[in-house]
Every structure is written in C-alpha cells, then in structure tokens.
Amino acid sequence: MRPTYLEVNLFQLKQNLENIRAHVSPAKVLVVLKANAYGHGVDDVAPFIAPFADYIGVAIVEEGIHLRKMGIQTPILVMGGTLPEQLPDFIEYDITLAATSINLLTAAEQLALASGKRLKIHLKIDTGMERIGVREYEADALIKKSLSCSHLEIEGIFTHFANSETIESDGTLTESKAVRSSLQLERFQEVLSIYEKLSEPYPQLRHTANSGATLIMPESYYDMVRPGVLFYGVYPASDIERTIEVKPALVWKSKVVYNKVTLPGRGVSYGSLWQAEAPTRIVTVPCGYADGYFRRMTNQARVIINGKSYPQVGRICMDQFMVNVGDDDVNIGDEVTLLGNGITAEELASWTGTNEYEVLTNISARVPRVFTGAVQ
Ligand SMILES: *Cc1c(COP(=O)(O)O)cnc(C)c1O
Image (cartoon, rainbow, N blue to C red; front, side):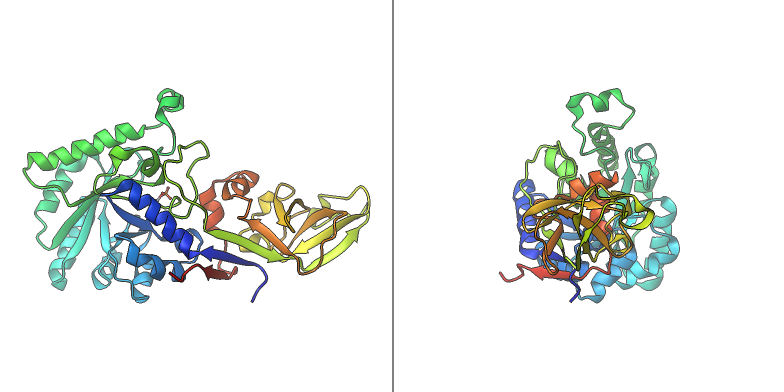
C-alpha cells in the first residue's frame, strides 16, 4: 500500500454520533455524508454508520445513488439544488427531494403521478442564506401547492443557517449585516404558523440545525438535527462552546521517502524559495497538493516525525514536499504525521487561509483510506 494514507477510526465516528444523539434526544439525527463523508471515505463510513443514523444527508443526487447502490436503506435527503431533469433518479432510488421552488414541486408531482410511485419531499425554506429555497415571505404559495400534491409525501420542512457558529451575544453579529440565527429561526417559525393557519399538521420532520446550531442553539432542534463537521469530530469554530464532546476520527500519515543534508546556497524545491544557512538535514515526504496537501501551505506547514514537530520548507510540489529536521536523526521509512495526533484540521486551515471543511474534503482520492475500530 502507498505509504501516504488516511487512518479513519470508525469507532470514534460512532462515539461522536452517540454523544450528539444523547445531547439532542429526542430529536433525530441526520448524518451528513456528502463530499466523500467529509473526506473520510464514504464507501466504508456509510455502511458502518447507516444503521445508527435516522437519516442521511448528501449534497447531490449522485451521492445518494451511490449509497443506494451500496445497499444502504436508510432514508436519504439531497440537501442541495436539483434540476427538474434529475427528478427520475429520486423516484428510481427512493431519495428524498429538497423542494426549493413551486416549479420543482410541480415537476415532482407530475413525475410521481406518471410513475405511480410516491416521492418524499422536504420543503426548503430560505430564511436568510439566500442560496436555495423559498423565502419565508413567499412560503405561503409553496405550502398551498404542496398540500395539493397528492402523489408526493411532504415528510419534512427545513432551513439552513448562515451564521450558526457565531455567538450572538458577543456583539460582532448585532453590529454587522450578518443575519442572526435567532432571526432565521423566527422566520422559520412564521412559515410553520402558515401551516397552522391552514389547519394542517406540520410535516413530521422539521429541521434547521447544522453543527454550530446543534452545539449552541437547542431551540433549533425541532424534530431532527443535521450535524456534518461535528460528527467528524471537528468543531465548526474555535471559540464555540463545546457542549458536546467529539473527537477527530482521522489521522493523515506518510513516511520519509528520502533523507539528505542540504548545503547553504542550494535552494529547496520549485522557485528555490527556501535555503539552509548551514548544512541541514532535509527529508522528503511523498505527498503533495494533488493529495490535498495545499500548495498555499508552503513554508507554513508543520509535520510530526518521531513525536517532534518540524517545519515544512520549500514549495510544496504536486506529489512531494520537504521537511527541515535540522540536526535530528530522521531516517527513510520513519512515520510522518500530517494531520491528527496533535495537528488539528484547524491548524492546517490556518496555514492555508481556509476552514477545516475545505481541508478535510480536499484530501484526494489518491490517498488510500485505512479503517480501524469497526469491531464492536
Ligand atoms: C453540509 C450541510 C450541513 C452540515 O453542515 P456542518 O456545518 O458540517 O454541520 C447541514 N445542512 C445542510 C443543508 C448542509 O448543506
């Protein structure tokens, strides 16, 4: 096997889910498995975790189809935007549609009628994200339309927060133009009251909470929560209150593939951006930006070798990068930790000017995933 690989602890993921469930109960838990299970490897994570999930969330219908073809029977919601021509896939694979417009709802009803199969729907209300969905001030027509669609099962209604990880009381939000989660929740509540006025029961699954809201906004739980990054053991912001204990389940490892002493005056890697001032031991790691080890981390990143932290030096290449181990005794074959065991996704994110989500979801398919902890 390739010496550069991800070790994913399935037991830790299950533990994270159990801790989330204990905190939000009796609300259900939709486990977000989009983007290759946030980089963890959906082919192994999904079959392991599906029996413990009430619902699975994906971004695009292709991800749902992939899960169904693996034999997963848990309900699956496609949370992202869908084109009308993709609707037959929802029917064929029994996948729940986020109805983001009256047009899409109408097309779904026509298709369900023609196929003789019922299609499950979650109405998507846009309460402040301005991305997809019907705004609260126009939701009346969507709801009325949905009540007339006899071939659809209106199972859920949901919205998505734009600033859930930001603490409202600290003043930053009240002074900025950012929409507060409490305001989004009020708008969602308005939409639910439209249901009441039409004297119809709410759809049975009302849900709003992503990881941030799951941590700090219990009033947002309703019938189900949708934690993504939190399920993977990562907090959506460094200063957010850690009301639920979770731990990362992933360690990104490699091995020293080359070892040499570099002399002053000999620049390291493309662009010769870094030079030693005295003879210095430089080791090479067989991992690069094509694996998701961002080129922008050049001369910023650190790795752990034999329990000690060392700086990455010179341009990160597509397939390799160099590490300055000074005078230390580091040998070919020694294990290198790129992420995990003391290096957080948040640190990697700060070295490259992004967030933990982008770090995790960019670990490429070229990096083999090795799974541990599956034995109960
Ligand atoms: C991705 C996503 C989530 C999960 O977000 P996290 O911040 O990772 O918890 C929840 N809901 C929707 C609609 C999403 O697209």
